[in-house]
Length: 71
Image 1 (cartoon, rainbow, N blue to C red):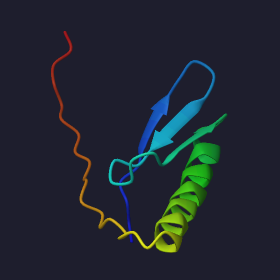
Image 2: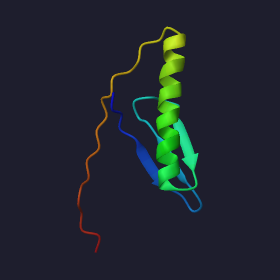
Image 3: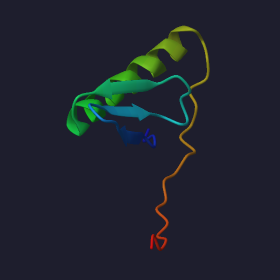
Image 4: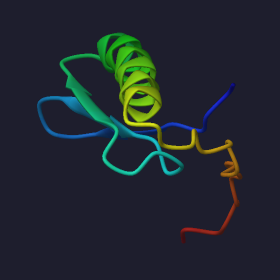
């Protein structure tokens, strides 16, 4: 499966979350680290859902970029 991941840059770290998997988040010092950690978090999250007999949500979110004039 391929899930959309939102990565946000903070003052001192990066955060990531998965819109299709509520509660699935990660924080890292670099973009590369947070992407590695969110992949691990997704796998762990799905494993937990399976163990609990819960359905695995199908990826349904997508990402689009919209250009606007800033000035």
